[in-house]
Image 1 (spheres, rainbow, N blue to C red):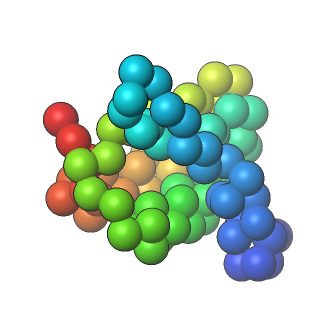
Image 2: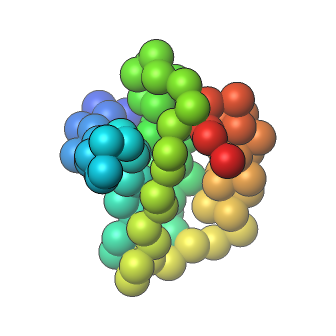
Length: 89
């Protein structure tokens, strides 16, 4: 089991701000994540997104090669509900 500090480091490494045609976009990279890593990582990335202080965020989520379980799906669902005030449609 990973420590919270490990998830903090990994979450920061998996969040990338990119610029495209003058727009700042947040890329959340969940590639090759295993089921037991997913839920804590989603929660930590959500927390860090709030800490960024940015609003009207354009978001891309990459889950290529990742495997999720019910806990991970629930974490994504909760994250979506919590962060919808930050995400631009």
